[in-house]
Length: 203
Image 1 (cartoon, helix red, strand yellow):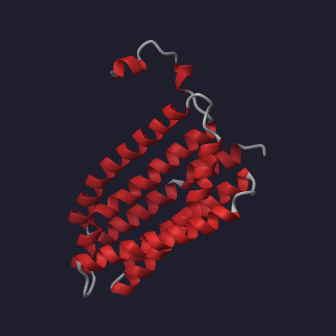
Image 2: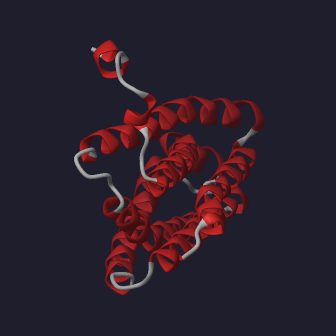
């Protein structure tokens, strides 16, 4: 089946809009970092946080989702009519806030700190997601939408699969604080494609 996808097709067949490339690269980095932590976060809470448990880990993750939903609704309404450049800036702001949340986890020692920094993560992704998803949806190449969605999923899920194993290895060998700092750094790297696009854009 894969031969049928790639064999006999010119390189131009796989060319996509520059902003689509930026989005795919940034999302792959962002969610690879995310997935290095989330599958093993309950282990961190139970072993490293005073009074921590699997129940606390699950509840704190629910806090992240609630804050993300609330801020996505607000952000989605506010960014509807802003420029493309402004949407990229909003996206970068949200991602920066997510990076801060990982640093917060590295410094956390109490249950309340875990809840606070999961809320911070929810705020960050809640701010960024409507802006960056709007950029992606409005720049999909006509008649190639399904292909570009497939490219996005393939890149993001491959990165997430690899990072889950890497996250477990780092946490086991070097401890969770180092893992959180590494993940914060990797998350920050997802700003680079957006920054490069802004730097090369004439608008």
